[in-house]
Image 1 (cartoon, one colour):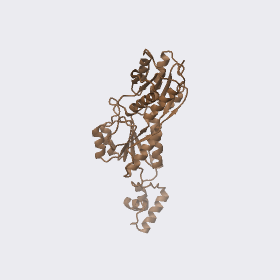
Image 2 (cartoon, rainbow, N blue to C red):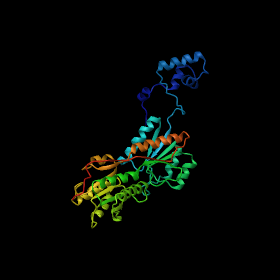
Image 3 (cartoon, one colour):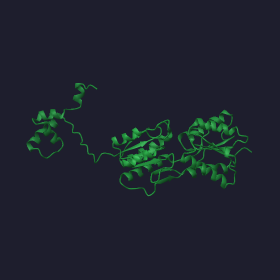
Image 4 (tube, one colour):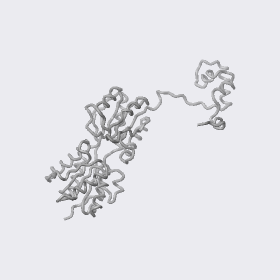
Amino acid sequence: MVRTASASAAAGPTLAVVAREAGVSVPTASKVVNGREDVAPETRRRVTEALDRLGYVRRPRFDAAKAPRLVDLVVHSLESSWSGAVLHGVEDAAHDAGLEVVVSAALIRSRIGRPERGWLDKLVARGSSGVLFNLAELSASQYAWLEQHRIPFVMIDPVQEPPEGVVSVGAANWQGGLTATEHLLSLGHERIAVIAGPRRTMCSSARVAGYRSALASAGVRHRAEYVRHAGFDESVAHHRMLELLDLPEPPTAVFVCSDRMALGVYEALAERGLRVPDDISVVGFDDLPEARWASPALTTVRQPLSEMAATALRSLLRMMDGHRPESTRTELSTRLVERASTAAPRA
């Protein structure tokens, strides 16, 4: 960019101009500006007067010890309200702690959750003091790389069970699955299906386990055909709901393991001319803004995403200060948020 004369003037005189005005060298003028003591009183007076006369703006000295520490937040995507809730929690906690945060969506699309190696190299180059991984899946070599470079990190809602000693923060997914299913049972439903996320994901497995436990405690027979797996998106959940509707004895209620997936279920039901909750009750998981916007508003299990992110950052901060958390796994409680998508089954 070319600077014009007017722009240069607006920026104020340079130190060289001040030095020339005071009749001293630039290094001597610099000593006065920076408060050095090895300058004669008369010389200091002339430089100070020149600074004031020319309107030189003294820039604050950079103090590395007082500069805010930098941490990285690696997210799977920046496109969802799920990530927005996590960012909000990290931002608030970082502000309170005086930290700067670099946000990266540095994950390979074809291998969901696997950070690129090139990003890890950039981490050291920019001097980050720690990392938060959100919905990330690291390889054994990447865990080893972080350990080798002594970079503290915390996993937020890890995809798979982390190795022993790795600190992670998540939600009480088993309890959430149990609560969602118990709610449907309390309304009188027995033909309850579940549309879960990928089989290998830790949160999905826990939610399905909670679902099965609730059925067992109520003495309701578990039907293998009522358990379907999908990705955490609308399109596959839409197809899974259609499969359930094509069963000889379709469910009267469905527990869907994410709010986004529940929107796909809504579409499938509308496609078949079925109404929520008159024909089928639906419970989601997450309590994203979409749950309130859906029609009818979605009953769902609230996952404290912002609180999880803030807790993870506070744990990371303690690790950056040389302290290990008392526990490597922290789970925050979930709770059912009842809205308009559930009702008693038709007689």
